[in-house]
Picture: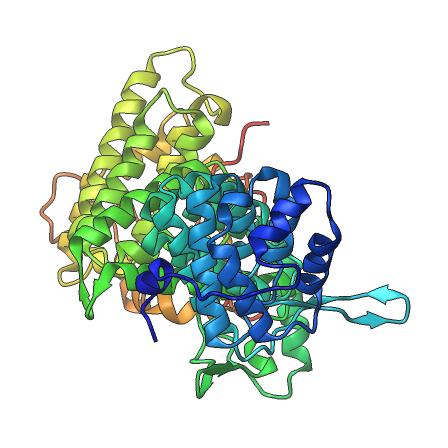
Length: 565
C-alpha cells in the first residue's frame, strides 16, 4: 500500500466510461449535451454504488479537476456526499487523493470540502420516530468511529497541506457545526474531542478552538443552576437503595469507570442525575485529559508546552470566565493546569492580583478577580503556606492603604458601589484564613497567632467602611454537584478542616498588646459576627445561599460582595 503523499502524487489508473472518458462527458456537457452528464450524476448519487465504481470514477476525476470549476459546483457537491468513509481502504485512499487534487487546483471548493470533513466529527445521524415525533439523533454505537475520525483528520491535514490558508476558512465552519447542548452526550463528546485534536496539527487555531469549547462549556454550566443539580442529585440519592456518606461533595467520588476493551462502561449510579450537568462533566473530563496530554511528554512535564498552553488558557479565562456570572465548574481548567507547577500557580495569582488592584478595570472584574484569589488560595492544596502568607501580606497591606486613603475622605462609609474591590479583598482574606488556619497556626500556635495579629485585622473590621456588614458568613456549599471529573481535581483540592476543641479554647484566650508572642491574642474570639448582608465567596455563588443536602456537612462560613444594584 502506498503512503499518503505517494498516493496523492501517483498517476491515476486509466478507465473508460459510458460515452467516453470523464473529460469527454464534461466537454459534451459544455456544448449542451447533458445526457451522459445526467447519467454520471445519477450513478454517483446511487446509494448502492459499488466500491469499484467509486474508485474508477475518482481515478478520472483526479486528472479532470481542471474542469471542476465553480460552474460545476453541483457535481462537486455530489462527489463530496459520496459515502467514502465507510468503504474499503482502497476507496478511502483514492478519495483522499481526489481531495488533495481538487483543493490544490480549485480552491473555490475549499469551504465545501472543509464542511464535508467537519460534518464527520460526530457520529452519523440516524432517523428515529416515535409516533409522529422525530427524535432522530446520532448513532452512538458505531464501532468504526475511532477509525473514521482518524481518516477525517488525515483528510483535513491533506487539505491544509495543499492550501496554507485552510485555518482561516476552517474556524467559522467549526463554530457553525458545534452541536446544540441538547444533543446526545456522545455527539458532544466526539465533536469536542475532534476539535481539540485539530489543535495538534493546526496550532494556530488552538486559542480560538479553546475559546469556542469553553464558551460552550460555560453555556452548559450556567444552564445547570446549582439548585437544579442539587435537587436532581437529592432525588436520585433518595431513590438509590445504596446508602451514601453524608460527607460526599462536589469532587468526592470514587473511580466510576469500568473499561472493557476500548469502551467505557458507566453504571447509572455513576452518572449525574441532571442531564446537562452530565454533559458538562463529560466535556470537562475531556478538557482535563487534553491539558494533561499537551503538558506532558513521555510522562514528564514539558515546561515549554505547559507555558504556551497556560498563556492560551489565561487569555480564555480573562475573556470568558471573569465576565461570566454564575459559572460553577468550568474555571477549574485553570486550577488544574496550575497544579502542574508552583510557578504557574504563583503567576496566576499575580495575574489576578493585577486585575484586582488596577483601578482602570471595571469594579465587577476587580471583585471577581479578588474572589478567585480567595478561592484559589483557600482550595489549592499545591499552594504552600509560604505563598499563602505572601499573598495575605500583599492583600492586607493594600487594604490598610485603602483605609488610610478613605478615612479622611467624604466616602468613608459602608457602600458596596463605592468600595466593592475593598470588600472583595476583605472577603478574600477572611475566606483564605477560614480554610488555611491550620497551616497558618501549625507548629507554634502562639507564633501563628502573633503573625495573624501582625496583619491587624482589628483595624480592618473596625474601620468606617465596616466590611463585616457586607462580608457576612453563611454556611453554603461552594461546589455542590457530584461529578466524574472530580478524580482529576481531588488530589489538589483543599477541604476545610475544623479547629479542635483545644485549638478553639486557645483562640479564645486574649493576648494583650505589647506582650511577647507566647501570650494570648485578643483578636480571635472563636465567634461569628452577626450582620445583615449576603453570602458566598466564589464567583459562582453570587445571589446564592443554597447548600447541598448531602455535602455541606462541615463546610465553613463563606461570604462575598454583592453586585451593586
